[in-house]
Image (cartoon, rainbow, N blue to C red; front, side):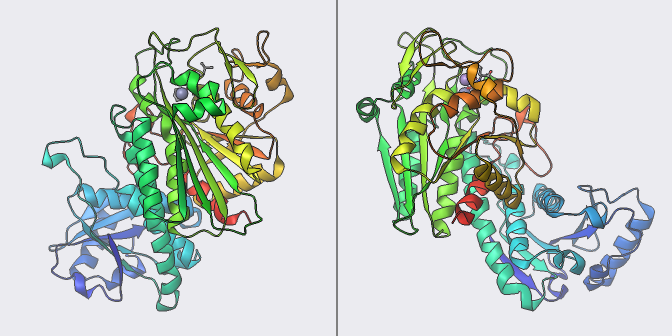
Length: 498
Ligand code: BES
Ligand code: MN
Ligand code: ZN
């Protein structure tokens, strides 16, 4: 996809084109920037605003057809509450709306007051990210051409003053890189689990490393895991014929003396629950249980593509969780890489097991900090909904940085309590710790369990509610399926943490 700027809207005349223009709540008169449009468009829009029931609520879309053109009126609500978050949604919604009309070229008209509200570079990022994510589509398994979305070819932007263009263009480039990586992560999530196996994810990591020579990849298999003593990861993997992998991506592009930041992502390519098998309803959504690992991969892709000056490592413990004659069972005791033992009381609490070995592995880097992302608990998702990931940390500095990065990325994060009381709930009578903490505070006891395996500044993000759209519910700004949550957040962390 390419972006261009246009000085006049003359060039739109006669061309089969779509134009998107912002309309404020209860706006009855033509917006100033609409005066650039051909006369016939102006009068059609003016007429529409006075005589239709279009309200201009945020996200509301209207459309008029003056001549050969299509003018999409994108409601933005009150001007004063039109912030980065709502702008993202409106632009994503409007671009998907145009795409659904089978158009792959459009013009976005930006009002001067809107442009001046932001710095040009972050605005460029926001716009490219919104259009890229809003028009994402996963159609590779649909055979009816009518049902396939078009890939957007060209977007012209109107309303960016010449003096802002360079910075704005830098933003567009970055935003496009971020959106492409996010959409890559969404593809990985949406792929059926028969395709998206641990081996497949490892190949993706290897592809990435080939593309960026400074990015180093290591893929550990069963034998190496045995040597390292990763009994928890191997325990979870025991029920599947798919070989597990432990993927390591290293980006050492900062000062030699500087210890890296380590990202850890849960990579369960399908979570059936294992012997403690899940109910059938919506079990299909457990193909998304690798979205933490995919987000780490996506973040490393952006970090490499934008040449971030920092040392960053991504760890992706990856396996299936299936029941079989060779599967691990409730009652088993697993020995982790660090030596600590875990009593398994529920084989469906498998994410924390594979993360335990990854958190032990992270120690070898003497990391400045470790941040893990995991679709870890239904409890967190039910409580937080799709709006925020749960943040757990006993380190104020790391927690503050994660919150800051989430804000910069436009991703929701909300800190939840992590108490010594939660740690008590995962003590085991038979081993050091047990993998479930009882009925209460499920998301926090999972975090408390992870904490047992850390010995460095650390934060945990439970992304169970944010990694995909539950019940396959599509939004006008986000198609159903994986969301790519966490990619941008991790990138902001890596960029800012110096
Ligand atoms: N991957 C699931 C968490 C999950 C469930 C995310 C539903 C999104 C939707 C995780 O492995 C799991 O099964 N967790 C259990 C933990 C329990 C057994 C302590 C859960 O949340 O029910
Ligand atoms: Mn599970
Ligand atoms: Zn799981």
